[in-house]
Each structure stands twice: as C-alpha cells, then as structure tokens.
Image (cartoon, rainbow, N blue to C red):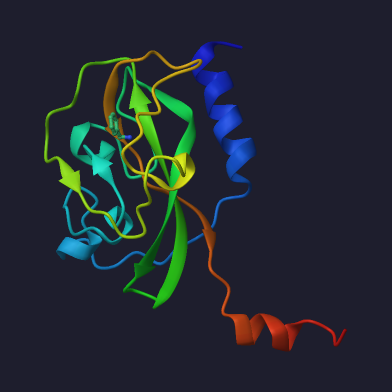
Length: 154
Ligand code: ABN
C-alpha cells in the first residue's frame, strides 16, 4: 500500500463512518465550497481545497491529506444543525494561493493544538509543504433533548 492510500485509510479510520449533511443551495455563498462564506469554512485558516482543484472533502491532485487535523463546529443553514468539521491540510505541493480564507469560530490558542486553526498539519507521514485545507464533516452535534428522549431511563 502506498503512502497516499495509507494516509487516506488512517483518515477514514479516525473519522469513522461518513455523516450526511444537507448542503445549502450551491449558487449561494453558503453553499459554494470555493467561497469564504461556505458554511463548512467557519473555522478555516487556509486555502479551501475546493478552490485549488480538490473538493470540500478531497485534496487537490498531487497532494497528500494530513492524517491529523484540527476540529471545529459549524452551523449548517440548510438543516439548522451543528456539525463537527475536520480541517485536514493537503500537503506536498507549494501553497495553492487561491482565495485564502481566515475565519475563526471556536478557534483556541495553539496550546490547544487540536482546537487551533493556526497549526500547520503537514508533518509526520505527509510532505511538509502546505498546499490547502479540506473541511470534512465527521459528526453531528446531537440535540440534547432529543437524545435524552431516545435514551432509556437510567
Ligand atoms: N492548517 C493551516 C495552516 C497551515 C500552515 C500554517 C498555519 C496554518
């Protein structure tokens, strides 16, 4: 298995099964994965992969997705739910240079590395050169009341 396949497998294992999120109308800024206002970009600090030849959840050709990432929570206007986003860096090619986006919802100082968008994750198995960043939905924030109603009484 090559490095790309191994890194992809690691990302999938860490991320667990995919979560389906309803996407806003792609003709609006909130539904356009290349736009700063795209709903998944609420805590991104970098070049969105979708504006660099990739998609919101896949890296541009010729780059390798970092298996480690920082995590944010963004509100999806299409279904009114909050989703957990994994912002993995795409590595191994020079900076994409297109449409830099710096939004900081929930961003924490770098000593909380997993909650800081100021950390470059092109390290370890990935080549150290930073290109761009994906925003992958890895979970949904459960409505506490609905979850409690579903749980049997303790
Ligand atoms: N994770 C985005 C990034 C890359 C390099 C340096 C700072 C932040």
